[in-house]
Image (tube, rainbow, N blue to C red; front, top):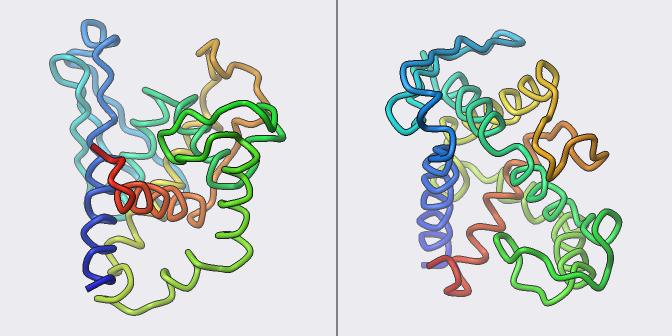
Length: 199
């Protein structure tokens, strides 16, 4: 029962992560735009339609993850980078121990409390153990390929573009991610969903 609930929450988190790539603010300028990002053997075609919604064409799940990571980084790199700071347990280092997290990935009242939780998750190997479980208890090959592709797409976008968003332009906390970072972010979504805060 618990594993089934976790899988449902994980699928919901993947859908949320994939669906959150659209940014209405950039809608007018993105209509009809098309990109063909590639790096390290992964590639995708990203077609932006009306209201800047990215539609990703890929040959397999790793390429789909790559296109999703690229498109989301292009649209909201600061938000994603902030989330990766959270799941690494580094909010206090970058934003101050007493400040409040944004609550998108943590229900903690302070960055320090959030860091203690996520560092505990990291040190206990919780996410690694979940990833090591064979399907259906653990993620399928397709889900692992999506994670691998997402990390590669996000990182490729960072390497090839200059961050211009004033919220994180030049910030040292905007840095490449690992597959484990991506999986930890999905784990955080699942935990929040289990708390009833994902609504």
